[in-house]
Amino acid sequence: MANGGPADAWLTLELADTAPDTGKVRRWVESVLPGLHEDDLLDVLLVITELVSNVYDHARFPARLKLRKSADPCSVSIITEDASPMLPEMQPSSPGSVRGRGLIMVDKLSEQWGVARQAIGKRVWAVVPCPATP
Image 1 (tube, helix red, strand yellow):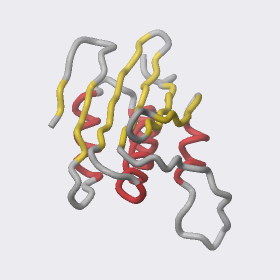
Image 2 (cartoon, one colour):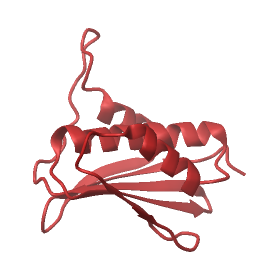
Image 3 (cartoon, one colour):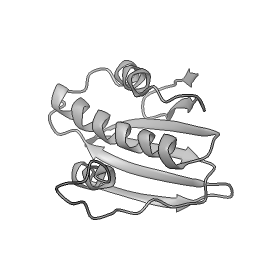
């Protein structure tokens, strides 16, 4: 379920604890972030897909995705929250590995990103610039 609000407000999608449906998450993101240039939207979607995939692979529920678009300068703030106390760590990847590059991509596409412990669980956040969006 999602909720929305005025510009610069946080938009929230509760993540179901069933089989992950990143296509549904991506469609929701596209619907709540209209007007992003295609290049910027692709960067945002890639970061979100990686962070949400980490929730499904390593976290505990309840979990949610939160987004906020800022206009000047244009950026999209992304947060995933979940109930697991385990903090993600960027791992070195090797050419033969098929996994383990998610946080490397988040790091490369984001202006900044980080992890914060909460009373229950953690929050993983990223800020993705959108320079191509007018």
